[in-house]
Image 1 (tube, rainbow, N blue to C red):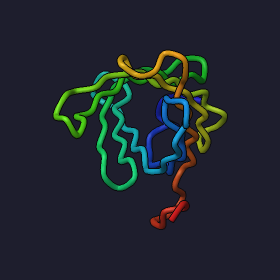
Image 2 (image 1 turned 90 degrees about the horizontal axis):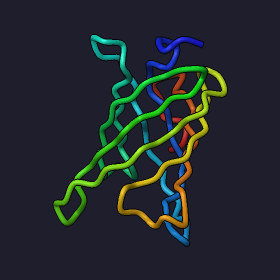
Image 3 (image 1 turned 180 degrees about the horizontal axis):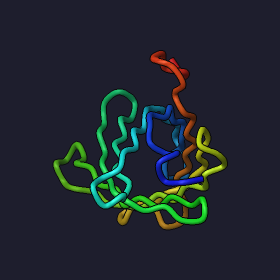
Image 4 (image 1 turned 120 degrees about the vertical axis):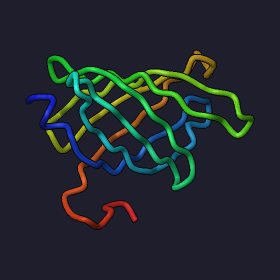
Amino acid sequence: MTIEDLVGTYNIIGSNQDEEGEAYKGTLTLSLDMNYRIKAKWLINDTYEQTGSGFFQDNILVINFRYKGDDHNTYKGVVVYRCINKNLLDGFWSEKHGNPLYLGEEQCFRVTDSKKLLD
């Protein structure tokens, strides 16, 4: 698999980095910058936007992300995806100030047409 294979939009389902593991869903859009680094944009629960950048090697995608919280503070973290194939990514993530006893989890499924798969 090449980095170009990852470009596109994915529906995501995940769980948060806390004891409850609260579920969420959304979309992830991956593109490439001029240096062939991954650019990522998440839209979580149709409300929260996160952005990030990262790199790809040996079917592992690593993205450093950031977003503004409801309290207007900027939060940062890292997500690591195992690229099962170009249509399926399986990942885990952690925020800098998240609960260190837990990891968030996320699965991504490529959108293959203009209709969202998880609606």
